[in-house]
Structure formats: C-alpha cells, structure tokens
Image 1: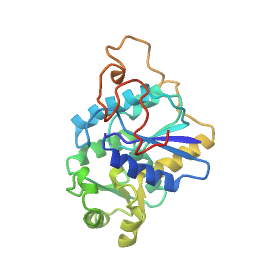
Image 2: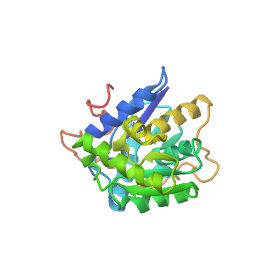
Image 3: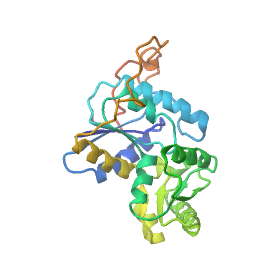
Image 4: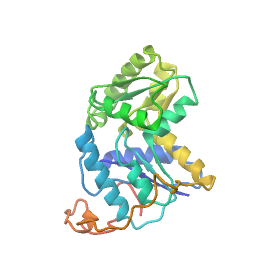
Length: 262
C-alpha cells in the first residue's frame, strides 16, 4: 500500500516532519510518500493562504506521475479536500476530520490546540461543515505562527501543553493537535496532560490504511462525482510556468529529494 501525504505549504522541512510521523505509525508494508506543492505560500494562516494552497495542491495532484492508493491532506482546517475527492479515484482523508473522528472514539468531548487565534474560526467552520462541531469543547490558538513551531521545539511543546490545559479546563476530554506542523509532539503533550492527545497526521494515516484495506473509496454518486470536462485556462499551472531550480518547472517534476526517495 502506498499513501501520499501532502503538506499543503511549500516548507520542505515541514514536509519532512510530517513524513516522519506518518512513517512512524504506518503498518508494515505501507509506503509513505510525502510531497508539498510546487508553488504557493510557505505557511497557511488564514483564508487567503488557504485558498492559494488549495489551488496549488490540486495543481500538484493533477501533474503527479506516480501511483498511490490513498491521499492524506495534512492541512488542518483548510479548503481543498472536496476538490481532491472529485479529482482522484482513491480515498482522500484530511487531518482535521480524522483527528476529530478519532478523538470522539476516545472521549465524550474533544478540543483542539492550533497555531494563531485567527485560525480558530476557520477550523470551527470546517468542523461545522463536517458535522463534528457539536462535541468540540473548545478550539484555542497558541499564538505561535506555523513557521515558529520549528524554531524552538522545547518552547513549542511548552506553549502547546499550556494551551491544551486551558482546553481541558474548558471541558475537553481528548486533545487534537491542530496543525500538521505539530506532528510528532503528541506523546510529550499527553504525558504532561494525562489525557489522550491525537495527532491528525497519524490518525489520517491509520484511517487511510483501514479504508484501503477494506477496498473502499470515495463515492462518486453525487457530491464527489468527477469534474465535468471543460476548458480551464492555463491549467495545470505548473505545466506552464517556469518555477525555478528550487522547485522545478515542468510537468511531473519529482518530489523534493529531502522528503521522498522517488
């Protein structure tokens, strides 16, 4: 089984961290492929970044020339998942819904610790659309920007843990880490809190393995039917724009060597 884990921003070091977490929890025989878009924002902190990233991720998927059995989208609360479900004929899971679904199996209520406070409404909207908001006790931001998560790992864990304590006081029985850049921190935060902590990347990988193992995929009966054929100007974008040596500039450019052995 081959799972593609897509970091929605263009920060390669974050792709590497996400891949490490996915690989650590993957079952024997599951191969993890990690990638990021060829263009787009270096981090996603708001609707503008999110919609740019969604287009860049779909562009990356449209130009990809390697087989995979399921896609894990590693952006928390960001748009684009539904478009990928229409585009691909394999299961598509995102870390927001996967984390919440797993958390609800472990406790009556859950809460989310994310990055900046401005991300909170976006995450709550995503949960509402997915029908998962009712059992969410709270969503709190740490005040750390996405790229700050890697700057000082010890401080990052301390701030996440303290924010998670606030979420527990608000009624959460399980904590979800609300950013792909927090991947791999769940054990340290759980040890400090004494409650289960769910990492969305890990949860999505395990759900993806289960769905593929059961021979299931996205329904195309209605909501996620394939896109209707039509002319789309300059699409896919990465097939037309020179993107420079750092990202490559042609269709089916290989994954970043730092994150994949393809």
